[in-house]
Amino acid sequence: MKRGTLCWVNLEPASPPEMGKTRPAIIVSNSAQNLYLQSVVVIPLSSQSGEIWPLRLCLEIAQGKTSYAILPAIRQVSKERIQDILGIARPADMVRIDEALACYLND
Image (cartoon, rainbow, N blue to C red; front, top):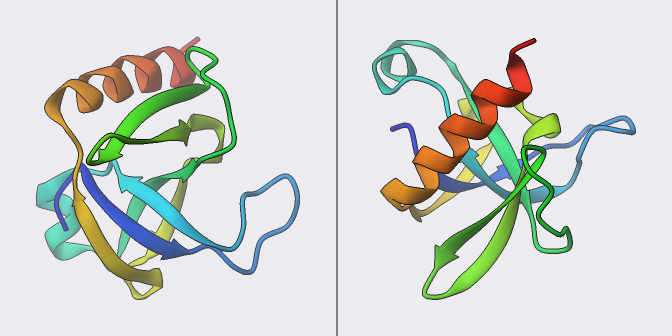
């Protein structure tokens, strides 16, 4: 599992305000650590949110299709929850995610 991989992830069970159901997500944990750990850190994606920097970022996930990375929903998941690989995020989108994560996770 490489950092930047777009995949379908089963996020159930979830308790509000956690995002649930099976949805696309982007892996943001370190590729080297992902080789050894049984879990990865993902940011769930949604098709129904607008962009609100740095909490929600508009990304192109496939052939012009957009989705929104919901940074407050970041979570660790078992690799067993990953159901299918959609592709790899564009480098420009990963730069935006890195900048937003730095802003969101720092004081």
